[in-house]
Length: 502
Image (tube, rainbow, N blue to C red; front, side, top):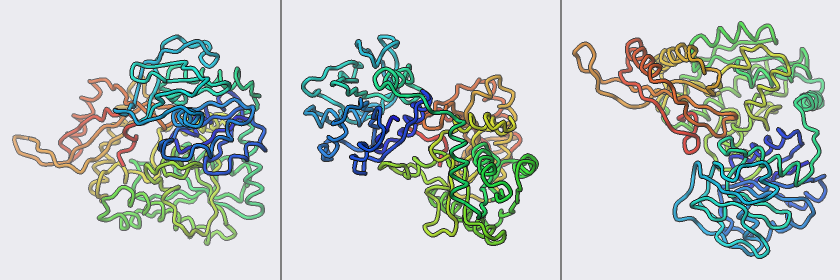
């Protein structure tokens, strides 16, 4: 296997999945554990992730053991800086932080086999190596970062992130490390993953029963399908209408999923809206929604009897953004089924997809031969429209957002590149805007259009939507949705922004 040591990067699991794309098995271990555990693992290579910290603020000698074995090591961003510091190099804070694309020029090295001499890479750092350790050599640089990659024996370090799609030839670089430098064995497949999860769920649940939290999206549907293979009739799907759904979503989910599993539909609209009344803070909204979901699932479990487990379609981006990854990750935002869970629960959580990304889940959905309608469905946040309304959530604002979002969806389906768009939706802003309609002054709400392209949700770029599409949507929203008199277009990538506004 290839072991990824997690120093708290938002991209750690992304590194692991890029290794899996090379059909090589990969596991993640935290930098906080005793790393002598690596001695007992069948390690063919080690990758050190990035992280939010600075290497000159920690005792780097504690990590010297990583480099004592025979397995090649690849250090990415913080991981490269760590190795440089351990072996006598120097790292310091940059005068200006570097986020986004940079042009890299590389030198001859097996890590860059088959890669052009110059290409674009994705940077995300505030520290930089300014002096390399004795016996090492610089193997790549950019205009602002002279030491953008280095080699020291079987150690290779990269200041940029090869794991994100924005880095050209990033997957080729990872494949070179895994195959050419580590000579790792190719044993990973989606079929193996599904088979192992079915066995694991069977063993975990035993003769008890489980309920599966169903949203109607591909994540919960795949998680439910895998769990159903393991548990059969002992699995019950529960779909909660929390009043925060898109237009006609309850009816569509009920019609589509009732044929796949035993599905119960719970009407909890009044309950959720009562709890959210007057709440402005995004984190509070997410945690309230997470708590209410769990309490409803626990009530259903008591009604059904013998239910001790809750199956969720949690994905890795939810985990890492909630600060619940393996290493010391920062909290970006608490996802309702991760950071929003109450401390005391009566159900044990099963998350078969916890270490996977959306596109991997879609690949599993194709392997499971699920309907195309699930596979191609755009991601929708668990807290629903509550996190697409910036500020207070109430029935009037929900109705405005639903109608605007429906218009955007209808027009987006006409785009020839619709399937290439990761997400496209409306956001209702807490702003008043002066307008004029029918020769009269208006002071109404502002709606934002958000459209992004991505492979996994960890990074995303804004979609260059056609001007005639934007014009058509803006006219329809202002004309057809009472209470909105201005439409704006969000052109921010992730990072620095997240996909959702809250």
